[in-house]
Length: 175
Image 1 (tube, rainbow, N blue to C red):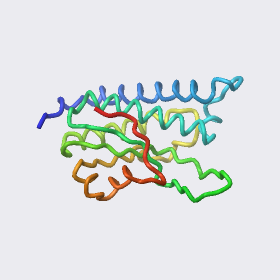
Image 2: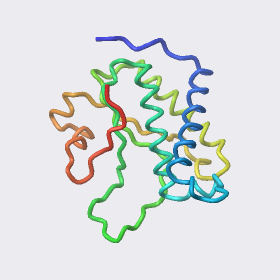
Image 3: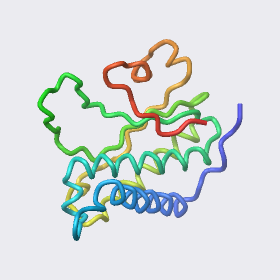
């Protein structure tokens, strides 16, 4: 088994979190807000489509960070625990600022869990700095669930989402 890289320092994780925030905002603006005249971030963060693009950008940036940090990470999936494929009429659910990820690993490690906790803490702080009240009361913005190939094979816990035909997660990255 390959061991993870050395644990980054607090300042490094803080810089990583701010970079994730900025790149995710750029992604969301490019994807969603490029046709909006004079977009205002504190208004956009309350728009469902913009938030979905923003969360996708966060997921993609986290995938890039984890790909470098730990070679045991095999794949990363974005999912929405509130997805209901039976909803008709196109109604939207309330805005959820939390990014929900399934991270498939060879084997979970204490170092990876520790890094993810530090990243969550720093990213939560970085998002609180946005000029909107949306993230003001969040204590965590990352819901990262580690799964293994064995979990997927046995359809154990959240790993069963990978074979869902109604609401499969979105594959963000794969080694």
